[in-house]
Length: 299
Image 1 (tube, rainbow, N blue to C red):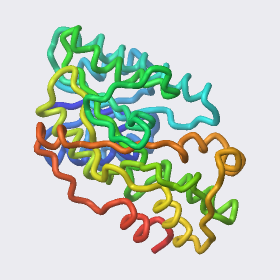
Image 2 (tube, one colour; image 1 turned 60 degrees about the vertical axis):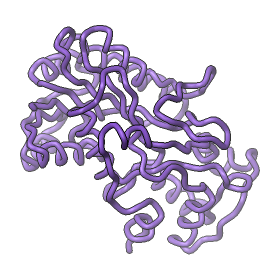
Image 3 (cartoon, one colour; image 1 turned 120 degrees about the horizontal axis):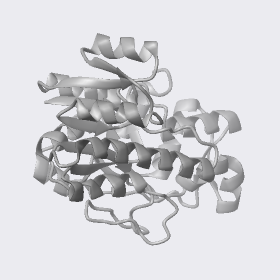
Image 4 (cartoon, rainbow, N blue to C red; image 1 turned 180 degrees about the vertical axis):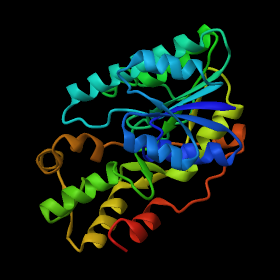
């Protein structure tokens, strides 16, 4: 299959490009710079220049392909309002690609997450829907799966809070950065809230399998570990940096973490049992705490 991949030079997208090519597919990767184009060429992919805001370019890329995997997202944000604005950019991008694919029954896999999806102390599954009033505007997922009504095999893959591996610049490196700056590694309350996790290379295989086997309108979970206690993550950060590990009240956490306090306190445990059964997906890479100890502190 000839696959258009957005975010093709990013942390998850570049791994997905590798998984697709190794699986016998050809890739047309979205790049916004000469450096990105060179990286795609070196990986064995074709290059399609454009950005998430360039909707015409996205339509052309989708029209040229037999399937689309959408991993791109503007992750740089400093507050909730900017995050909402980035989600709106993502919605428009998905709709543009879906417009180019309408009536073809070609697969379009979009990216969502398990953050703030699980009930307190519980476990989110592929059938869990966004709770009413949830602070996460999960428009990417809703937009992607709704494309099934327009003759597109729209599907969503939910990623956990920690997609880890070489080149990680997400939630765990943010925690490490805060701990390094503040001189302590912190968790909130008893730290029993749990984060699900997956290695980027395992996530990439999930994207490939969803593209090949996924059912229109379905949500899949690229989850290896159902839930790592946040306290264990904070302790791993403290050990890696050689700093104390402390418990904070919610009020103290707001000062310590800033905007990130919302994520540090979230419960995001999730199962991937249905995804594994449907697709035959089997994670094989290192798990989060092992990966942190080996690669996140210069080891």
